[in-house]
Image (cartoon, rainbow, N blue to C red; front, side):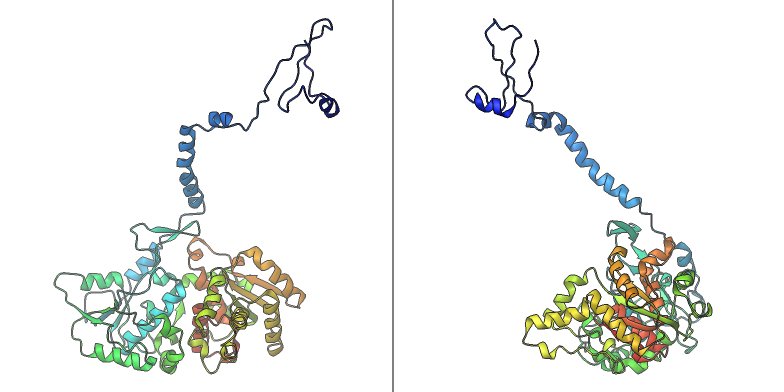
Length: 478
């Protein structure tokens, strides 16, 4: 018996009364015998029955159970974050961490920011340490904290990151317990660990001052004076600020020109005159000298050098979450950060002409907060006319490397020698988690800095550059 395969469509059409789509005929080889029709059903590989055979309940449960295992393995394969034990040992051995000799008063802010970006934490810590300095008490500095869970790591962007990083992995100077050459008699800051040792016992008495009646809407000078007066009458050695009513220095303070009333005093205080990036950060900057092309290696090694990286313009191009944040800024009618409204800065932000036109206002905000590649190229072209020696661009960005290829091509076509971004910087495992500080240290040294006026990173870079004596006009905004 020979099986005859599928018949041509023309034959099947002619005998349509005999066939059905899922049937075929098996014919005998003897012409005398009457044809016998045997029906065979086609077997579909994707039938429910075959599917149920392959994916049994047990196999399905096992597969679902393995999904988080594979995700965990993928996260772990990206690397286990460092614990920075050597830097913690350095903090532990700071000379002021001694119980012998005279003990100053200590000022701690238990309600300090945590779980926020580094620059939100940094601007707050600088102001808190400035208040402690003005009150002649020792500031208690904290870890840069992303999570209060007992685990040493947390997960962010499908990768492990340290839950807590010692502050001296990021910055040095008075805010992190460093010396104050410009004020040698002022009490140095201590770590939260040492404060707990001194003030954590049952016999210790903590004096608590609430922020409830603090003049939070006043100018910066008025706010600082109020707190200094509150602290002046305290005799207890351990002082804590209860900021549960409202933050001592909130986002409205940093986003308002009220902060500028403190400018002269703040920029001349040890918090800024003796500020320095941590040795870990400075080592990363020096490691990448070939990308940054300084005229002299000393320009990178000397943390307090006022000389800039000639020919380099640093561009802060904020992406990522700002895609949704920029339209919100337009909705709220937000201004530039307070420091970014300093009168010596040439670029101003004026939303008043668009007060009654929602679409025009949104476009105006996006031009300055989320500019297109063409707008960035045009801005850099204008800056180069003012500073003809500029040849190279360093881009600080949270953007993916491939997303910057279009900007790099456009700048090269416009005559720039080179574009280097945050993704090109070579970092070791410890420096990887302080990369934002490495970017800022480079931007601080650039001949010209172009930032996002709404960003706290830009605000901090502008403040540090001007505190070093760099001209206000060398700081621009998109």
